Amino acid sequence: MNYYIEDFTEDNYKRLLRTVQEKSHFASYEECIKTNGVVWRHDIDISVNRALALYQIEKELGIKAYYFVYMHSSFYSVLEKEIVKMLKTISESAIIGLHFEPSFYNLSTEDIGGLEQKILFEKNMLESILDVEILHMSFHNPDVGGSWHLLPYEELGGLYNVYGDNVRNNLMYCSDSNGYWRFQRLENILMSLDNSSKFQVLTHPVWWQECSMFPYERVERCAKGRMEKSLEIYKSDLEKCNRVNVTKEKMYDKNY
Image: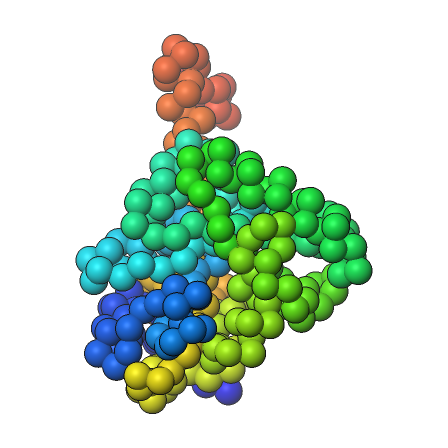
């Protein structure tokens, strides 16, 4: 299988966006379903830093995309000061949505009331943190703990469900889940776009780096970057409080 690892660079990302601008146009979900266009969506599973990098490329090209924020990520927290700052920057000219994980709550696809209650809870939390209005939601790992992507509802918890029947039955779909193209290579699809196309692109920002890397290497890079940043914060906090950073080297240094 050809995983097209070379596709996932910032330069190629910009080229793909320009291809859409040449052959079609970027649209909202509502507009795309009613008429045509390309909906560009990001699910931020792992890296807000990478999301910000892609947002800056989109802003340069005058493109408005969707960014769905995951409240239960093991790689970032929406309560961290730096993360909030980046997400607020993205929200200046992008659309922020909720990336919701039903399996976190052990929900059942039959319990729509319970599902909507938790969606509303996370929506209100995210709105409060980022001071933006949240109108859209997507499912995280929609085939884990139930077939969440097959729920037909256009709205859940008062939010537009981008997995609802109106989207699934009307828009073509391409995803870069797990760092490779799930169905067809995006470049091939974009080359066939025309004014009648109705198309949704899902990307996960972590896969798009300055240079091409294998998927595991991209995740490892983000994890190590987070570790280094956390250590920097720890050291900085010690300095601010006039505290000693006690290390093994210092303990055994006779001159210390």
